[in-house]
Length: 403
Figure (cartoon, rainbow, N blue to C red):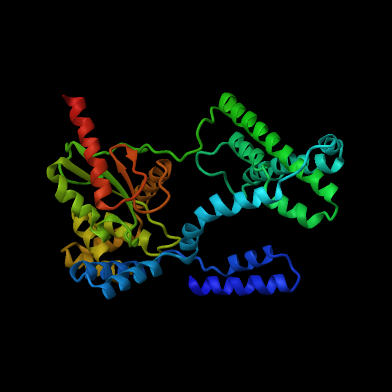
């Protein structure tokens, strides 16, 4: 990150020295920041170093653990976390204070309100954003070029488009670049300030109409478990009638799922017979090419009564999920390998896996692992202590309700 900051400073100095606007340097620097999904090797390496620090709390070991953790987090996310408070609470407000000031005395306001520049800026921001973003999104969805995010209705899409007409920092930057005349600059700035109020009012009206006419009161993802736990269908570890339920949607190739990190085991040890742990499939083939095959293997093993044994093997061998590997696991578990392979090859359990995926999406799951405590989706950290705390709250509520 230090090297990136130095490169950015050099780019900024060179850009300003060449006569270009300094904002170009920011755009170029942003394109130079790498973005990537957390890599399994880096995450596991950080975990190993932190365990080493726990056993040997030496300064050099701690520094090694800190560096390993930093390397595991994508650079763009680290930069965002580092700069967000400064950008939001210092840089943007200072920019606004330095650039938005308009002396409205001496008839400047009346002159601005009669200027086509003022109204061109205001209408362009409010109407242009509403038409461009709102109807662009709805038109794209209607033409099946994409779809609105789950939970977002057409009225809410229009409301968000209306609110996007609140132009400030970038609008003021463009005004400074576009107009040499102080009078025109003032008139355009008044237009930006008018658009702020107009867009806010229009957005409120659109959101209100969407709520009243179409019942679009929330744009959040669903939080309820779409399908209740079914002892006759679901894979359940622990007593079926246990007072506390934890449902996990997982991907056998996902390095962050509960079994791979030991979270599920720790939770089961904490609650004992008070917990029923439910496993459901959510393979993500776009990022884990063997996930669907592994899910099919788990279901083929379940058909012969060995789901949990195969479950443990698949998570323990996440780097070895080819068909021949799966056949070897079936043999190790004493399964009928030929029947196992027929199950996988003929996709006998594909419909069940698709049902799990559909249920996960209907419950707001967007990645793995996703947990449901009882019938409510867990939001936040999914380490053992966080989940145990939420499960304890659920157990307490159940105890009070039964008293």
